[in-house]
Image 1 (tube, rainbow, N blue to C red):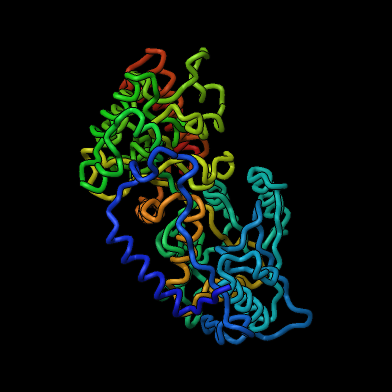
Image 2 (cartoon, rainbow, N blue to C red; image 1 turned 30 degrees about the vertical axis):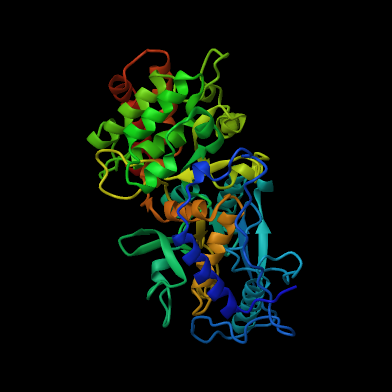
Length: 493
């Protein structure tokens, strides 16, 4: 097997970029007459170390204060509701060269973790709670806090749980844990704040170039575009003609031929529409925000989509799917092949069993008429890392976390390549990979509407009113104001 050194990989990446810029073929027409068998993910060179070398000679970490060693070493628990590795920074087991796509990088992460344990005289332990269910994990977290026994020194919490924990006073203010040489309080090269208020830091994450797994984009059914002779959304996007009007035209042409324009969970589609027009669900002073001009403009687009039955619903049922809480059926309905567009999350194709077999491309959701930014998706507080109150010596915990996240050293390109590598495992072309990475990078800052429990599910109420002709969108916005405002008041006042 050919061995690639790190220098060779850099050269290969540069060459691949040059080829990408030179090749102008569009995705909608790239797969000919065989849309399922032809597309395969772009090949990525397997990186293996030179013979006899387990890892690079050095694995730089931030220079912390000297830590007095204890015997036995202190255990630092990283708790989460599923098996995760802090962006691969915490390698609990020695990587297997037969299982790693980038063995050299995996060994760098593994050796860095071992060095961190030795340096700080700690042992890092992975704790999976909640039996794989984030709500059960949240219950365990709060039970531990109330009992004065945190479930971990570092805990990965979903965003809305982080908000609840913050309001309840269960999070350490990481902003008070400054130390000489800290990256968090310096350049933020390896670690950054993801929930920060007036100098207080309640949640942090590694710097990874964008939340590619949490990002939402717009999937395109390439086979249906070809079969119906539709305008290619990729070509429209690349030529600067990708707008709400262009998307609406394509959906209407598909609907006229018996197909749907778009599928997906209605809350996700509503979020894409609002964000692409710079609309928000909550006003800056924490009040009900659906009547704001940019938001209302997006909701008018939303209303048109529902009124004209462009959104994929159960034609044979009494109600739209979401009214029956059939979330997964809405999330994966596109695999039936009868819809042009679909809201897409990177993790869905694999779980839906269509990874590598469904011919699709991705584009950002088109920008609306009131948009002044490139943002096409938003989220709330992300699912990232907190230090619970009650943890012994939280300063040491932060130092350990910074050292773990610093595994790339000067080779920051490794992080970008690791992020893109994960996307390549889902996308069918390198062009789609790069578009998805850009979508992830263009997330708007936190929309509080995501962090208040059930607040954003009001889109299902809008859907019900419009679908059954009970109210106009403007009337529905006012009808739902009181209950949603109460949610905000109970949370923030």
